[in-house]
Image 1 (cartoon, rainbow, N blue to C red):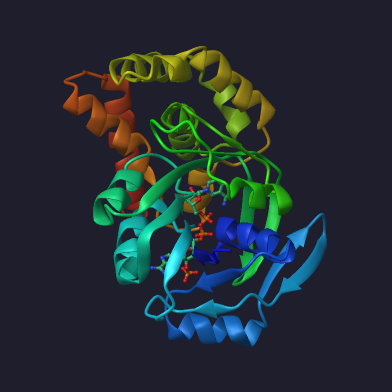
Image 2 (cartoon, rainbow, N blue to C red):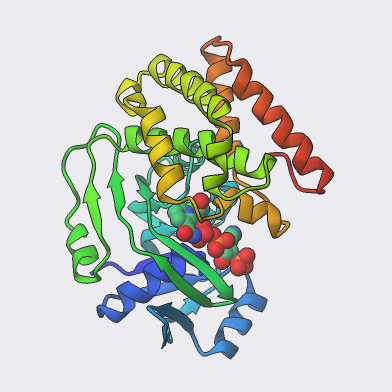
Length: 304
Ligand code: NAP
């Protein structure tokens, strides 16, 4: 049975690692460097807090330069770290190695696939929620679903059964790009506005015209990209998410509030690069990106 190598013992990586390990599956964490590895060993392993109960999982860990070959890799870093992280592991990838990409947004998946063309990349889109309470201590904040798929491939891989065993809710999707585009569109319609208006998701009820205008342009973009299905009822869905998560702060809001780099380049930035490629004029989305970049610059945060 192939070992699950997991790069990134952060929120989502930790959540997957703990559940796979407790199901008795072979898991190894890949940490950034020797310093992180020493810190991890001092912590005694990875802690997952679930329903208020904390459990420690002493999962073996290593650094990227280890000599152990990799047959299955779960890439659980942020989108902006993905390509470089995989490049570092390239010499260790066995022929036909599988890489499962948990990154939000679009753009990083292609960058990874181009960097390691002989690997078999599986894209994922997840509605699970987890956050890091401290280093190597992850809180499972919201149960959700993970869709996995390879564009153009209908047959699900055998290892999906292992996710079942580990209690990881998942589905194989023949239309994984549609799922990723839909999530990207929802994100573009909600997250930047919560940052700019300094509000929880529910606060966007005060800006109905702005939300509607963005949905209109996002639908236009999705149709132009050949992702018309991802545009269906987009505005209604955005309003549903705003109501359903009214008390939550969006992930982008939280990143900015904590002074952390956002993934905008793989969300709104990606959407606008696609629009430019297709020669589509989307003034509201353009203006949104401009305002967001100004907001990030003032706070000393990267604009990509
Ligand atoms: P996170 O908590 O910041 O964790 C990322 C981890 O990647 C960190 O532990 C970081 O290590 C590690 N990392 C980065 N570069 C590395 C490298 N070269 N070698 C080894 N480790 C490296 O991020 P996250 O929230 O899990 O998000 C991961 C992806 O999942 C993002 O694209 C996010 O949008 C998506 N996602 C997250 C959630 C969620 O609820 N958290 C839900 C859906 C989708 P250090 O600790 O050393 O910095």
